[in-house]
Amino acid sequence: EVKLVESGGGLVKPGGSLKLSCAASGFAFSSYDMSWVRQTPEKRLEWVATISSGGSYTYYPDSVKGRFTISRDNARNTLYLQMSSLWSEDTALYYCARHGDGDPLFDYWGQGTTLTVSS
Amino acid sequence: DIQMTQSPSSLSASLGGKVTITCKASQDINKYIAWYQHKPGKGPRLLIHYTSTLQPGIPSRFSGSGSGRDYSFSISNLEPEDIATYYCLQYDNLTWTFGGGTKLEIK
Image (cartoon, rainbow over all chains, first blue to last red):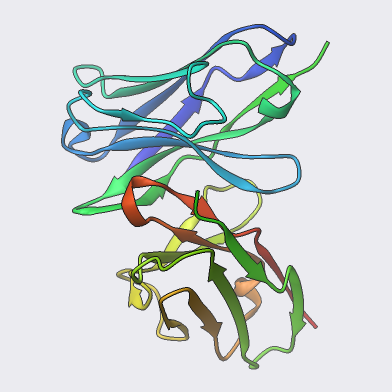
């Protein structure tokens, strides 16, 4: 069974930093591209970052480029999201998601971890 | 960036009935659209990809169609467990954009 468990969320002051983790199990983690997707308080879903299976390629939307860094440790089956220069618009529920076999969409998701940016 | 306009934002239907949700892309997305079901406390569940291909285990009550910029998603024979928010996702050209969501309620 594919399982993705996010952790590391919390309350951060504007301008602060935080690192999220996602522990993967039930599949060959090193063979799959992975992403982070967030759900805003208004319930919008927004793609945040993507990393290739080997970690060589990363992709970001303009809204987080230069502030967020996605990485992975294939030996530990863990995905990360380092976030810095956080502001209130980054407040969201952050999901870890696996990309499909040969299809660049999200086929399995975790249950999410919450980030709140507030003074 | 590709924008996805999803409608309606909410709808209410009777058990056994049928509902249809639409998504319009700001440009041709070459049928690279997926549909998700999202319930509180869980991650979204992939129902359909590449416009009309059902994921394994998803009942045939769920269906999708469309091309170019215009796509639709339908649920027939509504059941109580279909209460959820539904989202479209375009995944053309290594960018990913979601529609705004449709909250489905059962009358």
